[in-house]
Length: 458
Image (tube, rainbow, N blue to C red):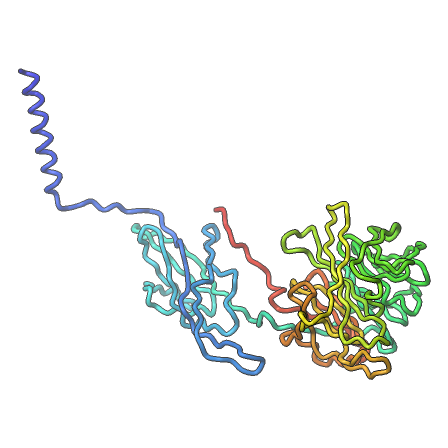
């Protein structure tokens, strides 16, 4: 009985205590010491969008898709993917998310004055701004916010003059080749070389060549190979040369791992070092191989950077009167023991956009595509050649070609058919113009933009 009374007493005590708690109306508030900006984004901004080279349209751009990255350690906030040229960030409405209901304060750029920020406030982000987030104890974290806007139009091809090699205008045939550290310019009158990153000081090579050696050269592993007078010459700097005998008849070019040439049988052959050559198979007769204006170029496969898509382009003999260039392609897989053969991209009614036959036609791998440039004259024998007017591009690996209206040639480029074209590892195009004697270097602006860090571990 005594135990029962104790049990009932405990129940009554608990009931009184519970009633006391439920009846209390002054709830406790929890204050947090830590806070931070956890997200930042922009809204819709005014946008002076370029319609063409001469006009812009006043419109707006939804900028919410441009992600801002927050480095909590350095206390910086920025968009690595810059807004397009023409976006007005002088009156910007932003969205700021914070931790633990912190207060957001904007610091004035020209003084120490502070003002509370509201989601409807417009901020001038033409220069970096400082935001502070205060916790409930009055302590704060300070962030520098930068809204990056491109100062260049991404698809503009900008050119610069990188010198005039002495005697270039006396040349009637030339080609240009790029290695990692050097640029090589070969002509029917001799060769020139210069440092590639800052090509301004051109020096003439002392090595003599035969008259067609300029079109019988290739760069493999930063070594220039030149076929001249039946010998295969090699150099890494244009000054020191080695020579070896060879049985190839025409050096076509190189991929990232192999040299390619026409051998004594008129077949395409390849070699890793220019010593032992292996014939490769063709799906069509050698009658369809190019004999003039030959280019061989390679670019990595999007699905496998260790494999390459090769393109062999050029013109057959001019006497045939072809209006279309010949284009061959293959996949090169260094890790595969058995080499794939070459396939001819045939002309037929199903392809309305073949590569036009052009004098001095030259093709390079550039911007994830293949780019061609040549004179505009017809290829009929005894016809008059024409000056290069525009680039052609192929986005489908050399099958179809379209005139490119966005890639401008250098201002002052005056070559009739007497020019050379190449591309280097830093996404620069090079054009040597024997008519004016000028060498030009240009790059599509977006291909030179650096990519900022997009992830932080702390």
